[in-house]
Image (cartoon, rainbow, N blue to C red; front, side):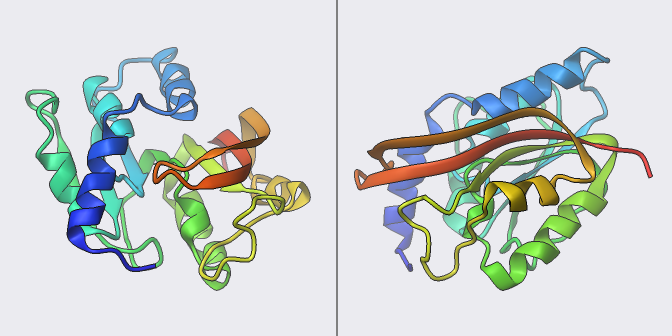
Length: 203
């Protein structure tokens, strides 16, 4: 649904101040066990107000932040907690149209379900191909019992479908959550969410 730039700006200001997602923190900690992040590249799909991007930059990652809304890039680059010397590039594009180079991490917190069903497979293929061997995906997919299931332009998965999507990965963290709460905009919602961190296997 379309929203004006002022509404998006208010949304990003509200959500951007929240702490980074636990899936991202888990993935970053897994990388930290091997070596420092210097020279590593992350792509954040649906970067929003930057709650995850800031944490990656703080840990010395280079980041390409992609969001369909120009207001997201504006909110991110205007943050007063951007680390000095951060290597950050913002791009305004839908997931279907976005292109990005090979990378070590693709993070997409609560954003991939916003792909339309007829475009999801191609977006996931781009994610898989872009990840270097040993690279990771961190993020969420929505389950079919989510109260938004059936909304136009969104994709929902059964547990079996999620297992198939992750068949080329070693799953390091997986949690299926169902909960009743409210969205950042104050709407009551039943959540059915798969929280995922998965490592790409070698060819």
